[in-house]
Length: 371
Image (tube, rainbow, N blue to C red; front, side, top):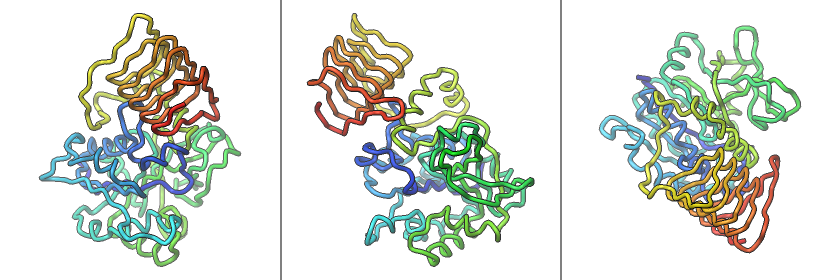
């Protein structure tokens, strides 16, 4: 069991899943038909024996409250642990002041009262699995003040755009913190996950807050590179940074690979979520479904190829859905072709024959819209 407090911070301004985040915060963003983004990090914490968790929300906290509930579906025992949803209750003058540092300062009493010696600070927009009990032991054994979980990639021109990058010396000590602008193929990416003592985190929060009202936690880390022993712990496995609509669409398309799906959804490391009882999906006589993820309660009379359908989606006879993501309770009318489309909840495509985006620029249809 990892004796640490788990903290999930909200995303920085470089993360913008255009359209989808206009209606809900990042942690509540639907993923793979039945999950929310926050499920992956909370499952990492819960599976690692971490049962005290703080989830910071930038705005619109209601969907996160509703999804997390008491935390019982994450195996969090309310007698021994608790999930807190936290946000800056004091209104800021401008959204630019709504930083993760501001949110932690606004809720610092909850952090000070926690009895864990260590904290693991993470973010909800990074999707990966990790045993934080093992990582905590690695951090303690290294003697580092702060450990940053990192991921090496040779696809930095196409993936992890606008994520923080790390420059390391031969001892894996972090000497520089930059931004991936897609100009270099190979990069060491920060997973926005930090392991450190709670006492040090409190000092860094207060220091950052005093330095600038616009400071984020990664700004504080950058300032401390010459003063603290900050090292990396490499992560080996699949990582997805859901920081744009293109990245959101691309991740769904990659998860249609059954090998990758089995690797991430391992029975020994379950991804936990709030369950929803609904009827099974109905596949009508003329339905054709290929290489797709289909949630419960759908009714499919048309063709679905390389797509992800949330609960209660209706695909009418003659309709064709290709390389698309259809969220909860959406409808594709008869004879309509949609391709590279992200269709938000309760939307309906009825009055056009074709709706197409592209791989690099998927088309987003807003919540409750009718086209």
